[in-house]
Length: 229
Image (cartoon, rainbow, N blue to C red; front, side):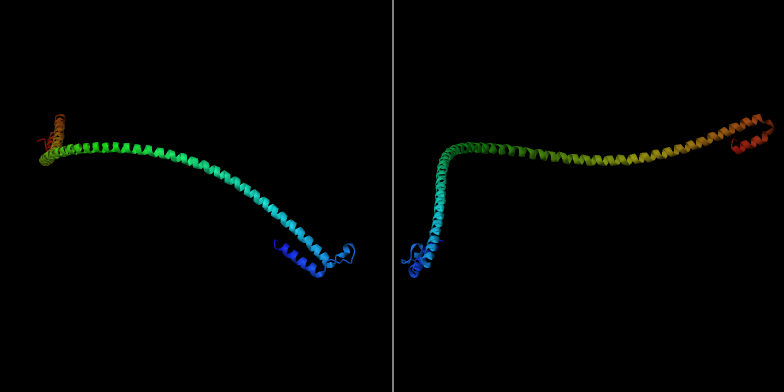
């Protein structure tokens, strides 16, 4: 569009010069020839296009001016913000430096305390190691004594175990003897029961002998069969 206007104006001028745009012999608007009309039309077109282009440029210039103003305002705001941030950063830096100095002082104090504590701990450790060594020696002696006592107790336990085994064997023999005695007593009881039954039978037969005089021989035979004689 920017190149259209000058080229159009140039070609329109050439066309007007070559074609004779003006006829002085005519009257009024008839003085314009066909080339004149074409030249006027092109001139009007160039004027309109130039005005449009000029309006667009003015609009673009206004927009650019507005954008520039906004950019300047934003730049001022950014400058104000950066100034505030710089002030805040400076204040924070001063605060951090103060805190750092306080931390350094506290660190130095804590290192001094830590050194004293380490020295005290080393001294206490040396004393505790000496005491621990003495306790370990005492425990070793005590362990030796306990080992000797355990050895004696082991020997006593071995002898006691042998005595217990001997007693167990004797108890088994005694149990067998008791079982045999119980068996013999049972057999004797059975024999006594049989003899008691036999005596009762003899007694009954003897009573029958006195009650039955006519059957004396039969009763005597019965007594003999029962084993009373």
